[in-house]
Image: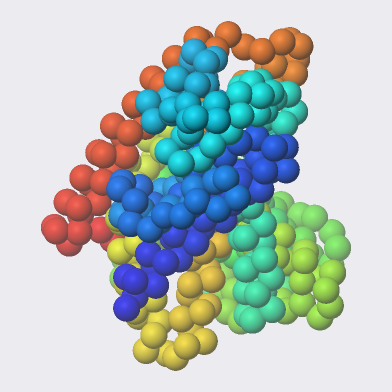
Length: 391
């Protein structure tokens, strides 16, 4: 059951993303040949209001296929393999029909760069909106984990901090080592930071500069985290147990939900930086198969605590994955939304369309590389599942 719910949840996240593109395309009267969820052969399909809606066999991915988007290289959008001209002179795209005037005047390639920008950014924007709405639910349910110290352990690194000892009520706002720096908005930030820098603290004896707020004043202090052999990790000696803020009005709810969304966006960006710096390995990346497996296990485990726990776990996972999808699609890589946004921005700046051969070649080459990467990630997911090394 957990796997089924996970697949439906992932499909919903993808649906929201593609629906963002779809709504904006329809608003600008750009012909949409097909709106689909999934990949591969069609399982269910129906043409309605001159767009084909399809559910496909493999529950990963989706598309909002606009006339002109897939053939950007040539600029001639009547040459798609499945296009025919019917007896009324309409261009028939596998049952979806448009006049030559509609294609010439409204296809994705010829609309203004401003319209292209909004069509492309609307997918990631919908992912962030979905994450924000669910974050509202989460902070209303459990509050937000503020990085305010609850307790300082006796004879700990925190007690030896210099020049100022940490104490209960201090709010951590920044952590810094000789090689890393992190703004703190939740105590989850501190946990992640300490875990990522654990080896540096243990082997290089790096100091940790902690910036904190006490009674409205900002202070800095220096701590040397201590290695705990029993837990096999370094510790500062501070606890954040039960330090959770719950919103008391709608303004606080929105602020906390914004912080929750920001946390996941920041975590995604940080993960990309760590991957580039070599602190994360490609084997640490999971694709759709691994994501569904992890989601399924988390949901199954939560089911033992009742329906409320399932909803909380599912909402948390959707906020995480939807934020991740929004960030990844905004990367300035051709064939992704971010790359198309860059092309649209360039068109705005130079005041004329980019050479379609250049844009088409960039999109094609990048898409091939992305497909190869996706196949490799898929294979890695399967290997990790079979070998029991997914976690």
